[in-house]
Every structure is written in C-alpha cells, then in structure tokens.
Length: 489
Image 1 (cartoon, rainbow, N blue to C red):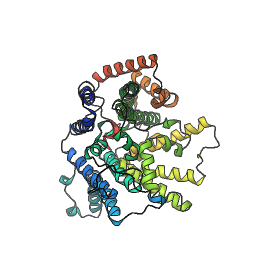
Image 2 (cartoon, helix red, strand yellow):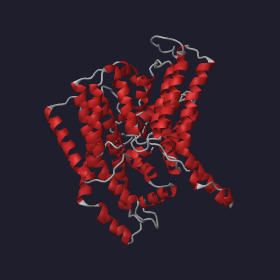
Image 3 (cartoon, rainbow, N blue to C red):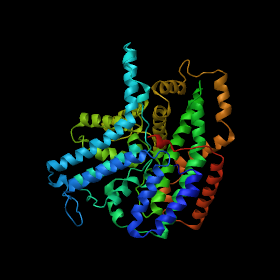
C-alpha cells in the first residue's frame, strides 16, 4: 500500500487512527501490529511470513542473550560489553544466529537473482551455455526487506551490547518491527531509540498536530515536487540519445526527485508516528546544502548512515587502526551500502565512488575537497559530485551509466544531435515541468527542514499545510500509480 494513494488517505489511515485511539492502552500494540501486517500484506500476503520469521528469530535471540528464559519480572539491560561486561558462549551464539538469519533472508531474496545473472554471464563468456541456470529460479524481492531486517537485527545487537533491555512481551516486539509508518522505506529505527516509548509514551494534541503537518508536507513533497521531477528524469534517462544540456537537466531533476521522494516518505513516517504517540529520529537535514561529501552523509538518509557507522564501520575498526585501515573500512562500508540499495553493478560503482570521495576527504583531515572555496562555491561543487554519482544510481545498468555520463560531458558520439534528441526538449521543457523544477531547487537549497519548520505550529502554518494537503490530493486524482523510489530497496 502506498501512502500517496486514495486507498491509504481515505481508507486505511482514518480506520487505523480511529481503531488505535478507541483501543484501550493494553491492546494498542496488538491493534497496531495487526494494522501493520494488513498494510504490509496488502500487495502480497506471502511477504508477511518473511517478516514474521525475522521477528520470531530475533525475539527468541533477544531473550536468550538476556538470559530471560524461565525468569519473571522486568528485564534490565546487560552490563555494556565495552565497560567490562562479559558475554557467555550462549549469548554470542544467539547474536550470531540473529545476524546470520537476517542477512541470509536479505541475501536470498535480494541478491539471489544478481548472483544467478552474473553466473550466467560468466559461463556464457566462457562459451559454456549448457551450464547456465534457468531464469525460472529468479525470486521476487519483498517490499521493505532491507529496512525491517536491519531494524530487527539492531534489536539483538543492542541487547547484546547492553544498550537496551530485551522485550519479554512478543506483541511489543512485533509492533516495533512491523510498525506501518516506517515499515517499507524507513527511517531505520533502532531498538535503543524506541524501547522506552514502547513501554510508555504520551498522546497529546500538540504531537498529533505536528504529525498532521508532517503528513501534509510529506504528501506535498511527493506529489507536487518529486513526481514531476521524476517525469523529467525518466524521459531523459530513457531517451535513446541525449544532448549534454538535457543530460545535466535530467540528472538534476533526478537529484530533486530522489530527495523529495525519500524525504517525503520520511516526513510521512515521522508524522504518522507522532500521530500514534511515537517520536522517530530525523532522517534528512537539507543534504544538498552540504559543502563536502562527508557532510552530505551526515545529512542524507541519517538513519542508514549512522546504522552503517555503528554496526559496521566501528566493528571493522573504524579509524582506530591507522590511516590505511580507515580508508579500507570507508571503502568497504560504502561498497556494502551501495549493494544494500540495489543488487546491480551500477550500485556497486555508486558506493565505490562515495567511498573514494570519503577516503580522500579523510586523508585531508576530514576537510572538504573544496575547503579553499567560499562555502557557496563548495556547496555547488559538492552538488556536482553528487549529481555524477546519481547517474549510477538512476541508470538501468553500469553500461547505461557510462553512456549517460559521456553525454553529460559531451563525449564524441554521445551527444546524439539527431531528431530524437531535438524532440526530447519538447517533452522535458514544458512550463509545468520547468516550474516544478524551479520550485524544487528553491526548496532544496533555501527552505528550512520540515523537522524545524513544524516545531511551532502557528495559524498561518496550519493554513498553509491544509492548502498543500488539498492541492496534493487534487493533483493525486490525475496521477497514475506513483510508488516511492525506496520501495524497491
């Protein structure tokens, strides 16, 4: 089910909110879990089995780590391992089972097709077509599996590290894993960030109002800005030949599309969470205002970048084992981050490029590659690097990425000055698209974050949110199916 759909806005959301608030406190988590499973299983009920499997394994592993089997009463967090707390063999086995099982689920359903395709490419290159595997072996990628496996896995790791107590109530844990506001595309909510709220939280008019404002602004970002920019990007990237100016216009439109699309989902998730009494962390902080790639990753998809930092980069040694190991760790984390986004070589290239840029900045003492420029120019230069990297993220494959980059830089034979390239301009430079593109640029570089803008809701802000909400629903009527980009990850 998509947030930006009539089914959700007019059907599921009112029923969910009404049902949640009518239920007594003791049954709220059970009701929210049931609603979340219905939301997730709307497209394919079989996906619910995978999420339930991950949930059951991590719940059992958490109790094993806490030594809670057979005990009664409230569970306290373990002594932090970094402060002298020792771990038994059983506890180490339990956290290993949790990590391996989640990564296995993710690996099979997300990377099996990638492995089969690459195996078939190799045996074909070796002139052994009889050894190729059947395409019938391909599996369907379940929605949101990259998000809920990371989220569920963080529970057992946090319990193991002593950062949070285990949950005895399985319904509370199932509610944490499956909560529909952030289930399909994040933010990735760590258990240590929310375990207190699962035990006790407040439901206030102020929270609900701020949440409603988040929802209004999130829908506006998606429908008014992301979707039109996406039309420009799709038309440009799908064209057979592209002029250099059109190529830059198309990838910039994609940069705006992916930002407003994903930050819109995050706004909707945070807003819906607030309406249910939960406070989720900020996931975006005006990333295109960054003056370096390091700063960009402090502002972009914050829940993922901090997850990779704390659960992968630091366990690998971080920056504690000398410069070379630091650069290697950065490169490895970003390569894996690229693969997390998509099982294709262009995503590997995207991660490798960001890993290289981060390592270069680290070699300069975390300084920007453009630290000698005024901040405005450094922001512009960083944005150009980000645009180049987005080509790998958007293109169909690695070859298409290189072809598009060649067009951007006017390489011989890539500008395609034929009739199709000329006609492309008539499709992507329509007044509506140009206006949407211009507004997106102003908002991306000049507007405050939703997180900050909604801290104090004044009457004029409420009126503006309602107007944007009405306009979004009016435009939604004329738009076709428009899923969020990160649904495929």
